[in-house]
Image (cartoon, rainbow over all chains, first blue to last red):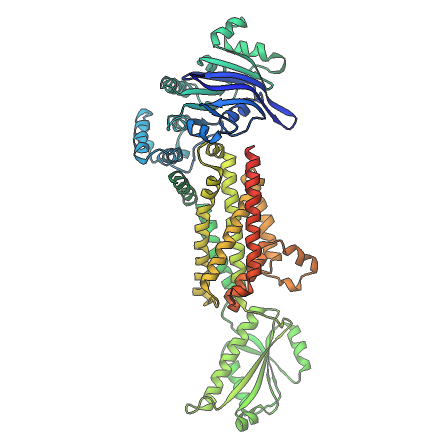
Length: 249
Length: 369
């Protein structure tokens, strides 16, 4: 258990008769970039919501950052960051106000928040945007900022639910550089995506289909195992009967 | 606590950044009061009056002359007997009939008092009140003049005011309680439900729920600014109606403000409840407007008296919180009664508040599940 920050055993989540997560079992290690792939509706978002304490599992054991996801979700919330599919900053607030808000919600001291804002804006070359409304920023900048805000309180784990949807390739690359930096600091990154090229950047990936994990290994091993040149080919081979290739968003 | 305060600050920023929200919050109440103010004009000019002079002496002619020449009134007809009153009102041009009793002048000189009746068309309550008040003022003026400077009380004309069609005519200030009731429930319920639905729609609610903020903190944080702003609104409406119409609060102002807070709280919890059943801002707006505005205007006694409604509507209006608040606020503002007369209504509002809190908390949990 020592360096496993996420431990999932036989996780089942049902919504009425529909089984969204069917007996998931996996571990995520500290400082790892863990990719969570699957077609739309495969159950990724449900899983990520359970891990982040938004939903309770129907059955099974889920330990996140040392806490039980069913019973101790309040403790989990203090130790994780979260960035969701939809944009998570307030468009009618300025950059600084958004950062201050989230810093405050996560209980950071005002002086700490001030320093972080400073660091962050320097790093992102954002200085001149400090007092701009989010709605005035280009999408790429917003996404980078949203990510920075999600790790502002230096959580143990950060969950990214399709963070790069609709972002241009250059920004996506920069975004992944930020992810690497974060992981290098020891923060575990749990990311869902359906860009298959992004899957190549992950330390390990799991592929979900119809609520089940059908493959889980490093990208290299998976490619060997399925005799494929890219993760995309792996994905298509696994998911085939139901799903056509995905390039989308 | 600091978490929470930061969150509340954000809510205030949302409100102050969005001009539409600000407009709805403060523009609409002010506009309502002023629109009603103009509709309920406090001035009359050339209002039609008919005279039924059963005495026909010097004094009655003089008084009639004074009334007609005041500029506020215009004589429509001279009536000959009581049976004409109904007919002249039906024609619609006449707003009031002034009746001098038989031997008016003689009585006034010999006994020092005489009776004058004013019958006003109560189907237009506002005009009726104004017309009678103006007439009364002129009559008063006349009797002091007649008595001379020495002994102003020696002559007394006893005016007797009756309303035709609407004998229970209450004050024309009725609309202020109605406007407060309508505005508060609309703003509180609409704004709260929209602001929560907005977070759901934009996905920021998820981020908040994942954060260490507890759901209850999120809810309270979201409604708190509206609580304060709505309270300011009450003060604004009361202030405006006092400045523009000279409407006083007869009863206890503290009690009135306390009851207003209760009603605001009730409306906010209703808003939270609406937000738990709507996923988008549009749904929230729709439910609030159709579900609250129309019933409040039509059934709460704001415009149409509940006593005159068919029984079925009476029962329907019993589930409407505005009905009770209108009754409370009318009692305090116009009749000047205290808590003894409105404890039932107050209790009902408290129970409704608890009810909405109860279901909202349950619903909110279910949604998280």
